[in-house]
Image 1 (spheres, rainbow, N blue to C red):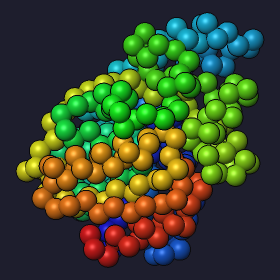
Image 2 (cartoon, one colour; image 1 turned 30 degrees about the vertical axis):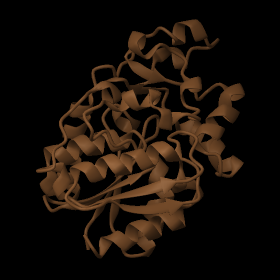
Image 3 (cartoon, rainbow, N blue to C red; image 1 turned 180 degrees about the vertical axis):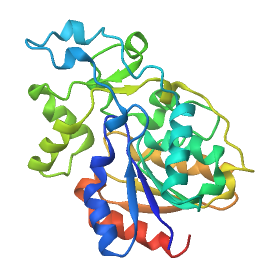
Image 4 (cartoon, rainbow, N blue to C red; image 1 turned 120 degrees about the vertical axis):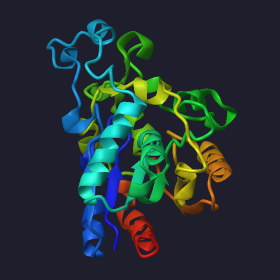
Length: 278
């Protein structure tokens, strides 16, 4: 059975997959959650995040320590993580949200390491656009992410939020964790990073049928998503199909943007169903 590599999205880290890895283990599936470049243990926080008293004006202008990270550099790191985890054998790679951008670039770099690429409410920029360009397409109407930003991304080199603002927790929960119980959502918010690298969503990279398109793809559509609206998720499915050798398998979950917290059993079941086919 193939090993599973779990890839988080912006502001998150490997920690967000803990409930899914537990469920996968119960099903006999070996899985490893990784920290992307610029995130988790590979991330760096703005020093002004920790200053007391907190200065929102200083927080809004401090240059990010992860500004040099790009989609290409993060993809190169992910390729090496997958190679290590799978001992060079292909793995099933499951990518959430903006992690889909990195996984897409990695799949183009090293398709031989991907037995199956699974997107979970993820960005999949396969049509020649950087993922940031989808922020302004009609299918993205209704998203709630942009209101969370606390700095000009171009000015600081990162997409910056403030997880430590207790008054802003309701907005973060509505955006990411709408169907997650309050205690878990509060714990998750406390673990979020402030910065995610702007260079990941702004980079355009090639995606070809001869490399990326050779592997099977699955897209898990989250039907209550306030971060990547359902219409945009379905657009990504159509664009993946246009560059792939076979149609994308679509799985629907009645969940918010974070089924790894609200529906870990259902998500693990969906992933396990792919393991025997990869």
